Length: 359
Ligand code: SAH
Ligand code: SF4
Image (tube, rainbow, N blue to C red; front, side, top):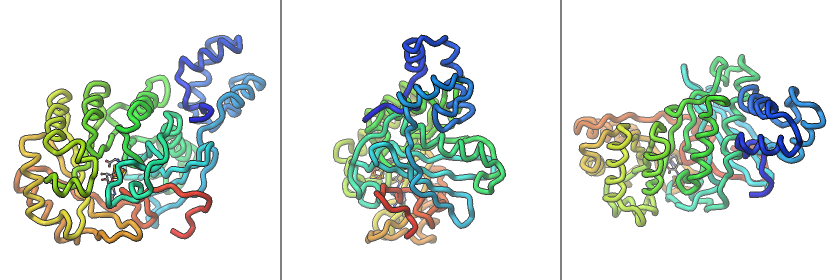
């Protein structure tokens, strides 16, 4: 990481900086309120601070996002995707989804991803770097500001605040664990952004040590596990990290998680035609999850350009869901939000240079 940005600062860092500048400590609160409640973009906009101090703060700690390279809105106006560019030129995508009573932001934790799932656009691009706490937080604040400033636009779902944050964008959150956890703590701060711990969901491809740490350190945060297959043979191919953390170990860890937190886990399965969508596959999943407090979310594969994989047909998805339900596993089928603008699960990637007008 290069120079830290304003959102990389903990409250103590702001306090230390104010001491260095021989400023009274109430200035710390002024900064915190301006950034996390009034949602200013940059230190220069913190009007409660004397002008010279604003400028110094701005120079020392610039904004994390230096440009919004492109923004796309889905045809129904309910999904909005932004391509955000950071100081070193790296870009990530973040998505806002508005529902009747929820406004969910889907954030990225890494530029690219090292795990390389065969059906995922991010995985195909390889790993570039981890995001900092500030860079993760900035994605949420980007959309929070949008909602705050334009409460009437239809994309805001009638205005209001961000109600949920899901770590389901680019990257594997548990391979950038400290920044992910600190971003959650920052957004959860009762004196700042005030988003409840239960409003966060972290999705993992199955990094076992990360699941244990989530249970210990942030037990109220929701966990989603990207399962995709109920046998090691198939999962090794679809989610290569399964070779490091095979299903036996993953499921034992999930069981520990449920026992220690008392919380249900959501298992996600992207259904791919003729790859993992038969009734035999459904039975394998049912056997694997037997006895766990679990919920399964089926996502008909979102198409990734240039990919040989096809989404499972609607009928197959319904039959798969029925099979799981008949074996006592609560199952839902996720609607393909944002697919028309490549904002669906697994469709996010970085782009350099050109805005995404071709999409
Ligand atoms: N790396 C984490 C979180 C980001 S991916 C993880 O894998 O869980 C978010 C979700 O999108 C995961 O469940 C992932 O398996 C799913 N996904 C990836 N590519 C997809 C695609 N092409 N269609 C549907 N879901 C996909
Ligand atoms: Fe990485 Fe998740 Fe995509 Fe797999 S599905 S490549 S873990 S972002």
